[in-house]
Image (cartoon, rainbow, N blue to C red; front, top):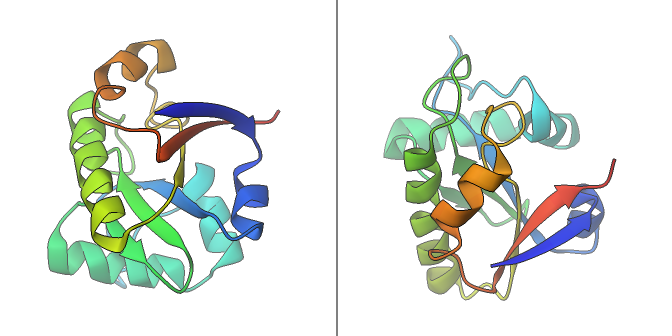
Amino acid sequence: MKELVAELWDLHKKGEWICITTNGSLNKDNRLVMGGGIAKEAVDRFPHISQLFGIHVMANGNHCGIFIYERLISFPTKDNWHTFSTVELVQQSCLELIKLIETYRLERVYLPRPGCGLGGLDWEYVKPTIEHILDDRVIVVTNVV
């Protein structure tokens, strides 16, 4: 695992793969609830993405998913939009991310600090629980303020 201070969407504009931290909550239209943080930013850029992520959650549960056309990976950190993230779900998503990287032969993927924004977790707590799972193909991004 590497770390980088950067603007996540600038990396995406350069053709890089980025993870969108998500939850497992669907609204009445079976769209994933994506009302805040990086998830909201993704919906602002890709209005259809909440529908695609919702279809993924209905079919696969609250697990990582890859969206080739958009160059996005859903990365669950919470079960419900209104609760805090859990380290256990972040760890599970890290394991799933590595499998996606291997399956799709991705060179690198950028991941915002998982669970550490609206998820309520502290990076100094999360980092030691995931750094042994992620390899150098995963770059954890601290957003430029």
